[in-house]
Every structure is written in structure tokens, then in C-alpha cells.
Length: 186
Image: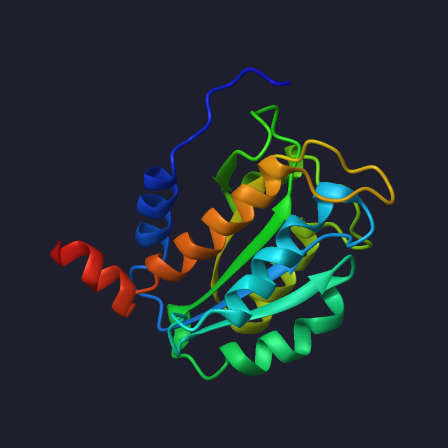
């Protein structure tokens, strides 16, 4: 197991809130293979957000699986309703970051070329460039450190735990989220 310390949920929330400060419309795109163990992490985060009753009206999750380029039209139509740079995309995927299994980290969109994402047909860097050109939006990438991405395996308990944390943290980070407001008052 990689030995680096696991970043806290608090740090993930703090970084996301900073990235989403001026966002009026947010799209979460879950990426990964449903057949390769922990590689499904991004897909399961998107599905958890879709099912959430606490999700803000300005947040929509999309399941991109191994070919997120297939949903670019749907994402662009959703985000083009935002004014200018107030549109934001959060890409979520399993990423080899040499951290503890289940660790999460916001990766700078410009610096993801050095990070290993496992099963996409199209590299995330190309997908990011496409979105930025089409809709002039900001983009955050959340990586989840996988334990095992072998074919036919189920997700590890470490990544299942991270999926719940990432989904709830994204929901809480959205500006104007009722749940975030309640927690801040306490």
C-alpha cells in the first residue's frame, strides 16, 4: 500500500468550495469502468449524487463510464444555460496517485497529464480542453486512489467509503446548498 497520508474530507470540502465559489451551474461527470473493481469509483459518485435528495437544483450528475465523450452534448446543453464562466464541471475518476487506497484529491486540470487514469477511450486532458473550448467553463478533477482495478472484481471497501465521502462533499460544497448552510450554523 502506498504510504502517503490520506487527505481529510475537510480539505476536500475546503478546496471544492473555493473552486465552486462563483459557480451557478455545476455538472459532475463520473468516469470509469463498471467491470474493473475500483475503477468504477467516478461512476458510483455520479450515481450517488443523482439519487441524493439533498442535491442542489444547480447540480446535475452525468455517468460517463469509459467513454465520457459520449455525453459531451448533454453536458454542454446543461451548462450553456449558465452565464459565462459560472459553469463548472467536476470530473471524478479513479486515479493512480501513489496515496493510501481510497484517498481523494483535487487535481489541477492543467496538471493531470502526469496522473494515471486507467480505462478511458479518450484521455481526460482532451475532454477537458474540449469542454473549455465549447462552453468556457471551469473544471475540477477529483481523483480517488484505487486499490484494485482488476477485471471482474468488486470495488474495495476503501473505495466504497471514499465514494460516499466524495458524493456528500460535492453536495455540501455547492453554493447555497441547504445542507451546507445548516452545518455552518451549528
